Length: 182
Length: 194
Image: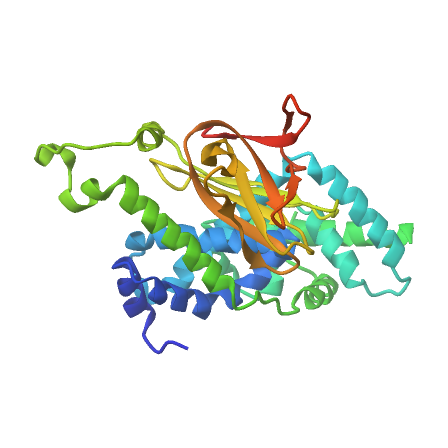
């Protein structure tokens, strides 16, 4: 593991040192992988999205005003890239097919316990709008404060609270539907 | 609608979130793939814009450029894209991402992804490499479950291509518009730059 500071690695990467950028990737990618996988809903697609986010970050390194806070700057790029991907994908026809498959899987795997299975939860999260999904994941899965989420997304705290509340209401509704089906 | 949560809502949210907090991690080849893409990008940069990088603004001094036809086409492009183009063999049901991103203002870079868990080699042929007459473009293993990819610099326009698996099996891309030639050989079509 590299011992250089983020600032030193960013400076070296700007000079074209790809190993320095690889060190930054190794330092931060695990931190964001879970968010991207949950946001996108597929590991294969999530890897493409995370790769794209790092490529975008590399090309924009000169715009990183505070290299010492590279991680926070990168978080904004990762979150943006994930949201953009999800919004674009939702416009594609394939969505319908995915949902049919997902519903069939849920019906096949749902238990009748009060607790939700992971499949139930993944299915329900996948049904949320990109904005609501992003806010819910950052708040409850990544366990960030609303102030931290506001800094990453550029959305105000009250709007974020509303998104999270609506996301939770929708999740409850979806999971109740799944149990009714089961 | 108040934006505050009630205690039983918090308990519900926590239960949902707990299921989603399982750690996720990509394999250690992640950086290899990332750096390979960035290195290809550097090479493209060096190939297409060396003078601009070294000399600064073009109006400062007279510069004579020698530009190949392909470079000329690429330089004429105003928008560039990386297209991750998915192809799955053996009718695997998993959908593959098709992502387009603006990344470069002078050239078009297309990333071809092919998934075949049993392939020992995969190559790309198309009108952009004379259908492999001199050299096929090899795809490299880029992920688990038989995932192969190659990044190719392409001039804008309509192109036809196909994959050759294990050196002999001709395979069109099932997720791209098809085209058959006069001998009923199927290939695929990609439009770059639109």
